[in-house]
Length: 118
Image (cartoon, rainbow, N blue to C red; front, side, top):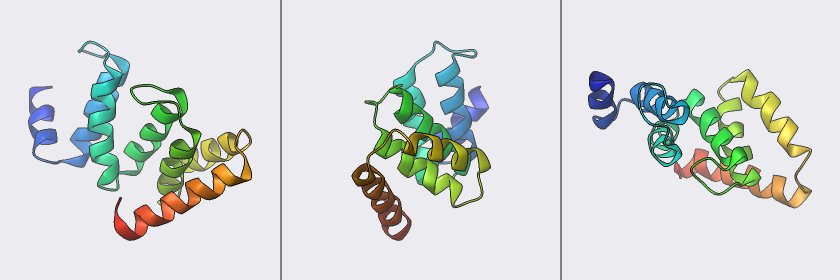
């Protein structure tokens, strides 16, 4: 855990993603969704498809962030664009609970992120 945290603090996306999972599940540390989102977001913003998928889950469930299907769809779309198959399936399932406007908004956010990295 010590070395993973050091790597994460140095910007290593895989270590950040792993720390996000550790905090989300409470394996070896107290479960802390806010901390999980912090580390997962850092990795997701670096383009880590697993972290993007996990961040989508956090938004869909409201773990550490307000529940937001638009943001969940956005992160799953980004992971899906990298070939993350589970992200495709999960994104398509949540789309069934969204309005066309919400889907358009999420797709726009994903496009903007790919262009601007935000």
